[in-house]
Image (tube, rainbow, N blue to C red; front, side, top):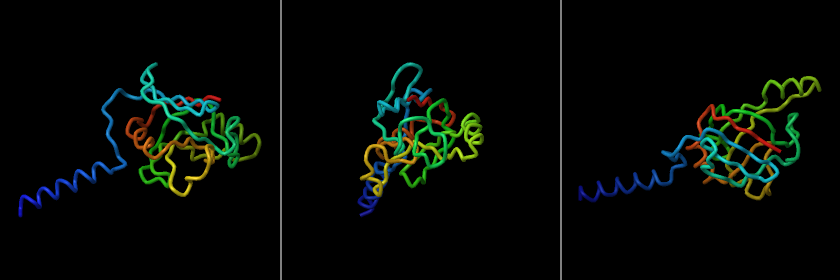
Length: 163
């Protein structure tokens, strides 16, 4: 009977680990993220080597650079991963340091808010029918892909977002 209990506890522990959204990664460091909006592709790079590529969704108005809060655009330019949210409404998410000083200055000149809270994130059930470009300016992947990205990318990783 004791053997059975130990076996049951081990089986439950293995099942809980296998179902966890927190994966581990032991491969090469992701040194850069490149996003190509027109192609709807994101690449995790180690130097010049592509480690992983993903099909992505963008803001609901994907053409052009994000300038103001609520414009539905995904930013373009040079940014950095600056935070992580393990309890995101969007499964998991990693933050991008938009707006940068240039973004803030442009919006201030127009007397508008540049917006913020731009993330790479998953796609929760309630947004399952949102089409390809459904976010408010973020970069979206599947939840399974987001688990992988979350494990691979560290805070401080540079991200280039191109047209």
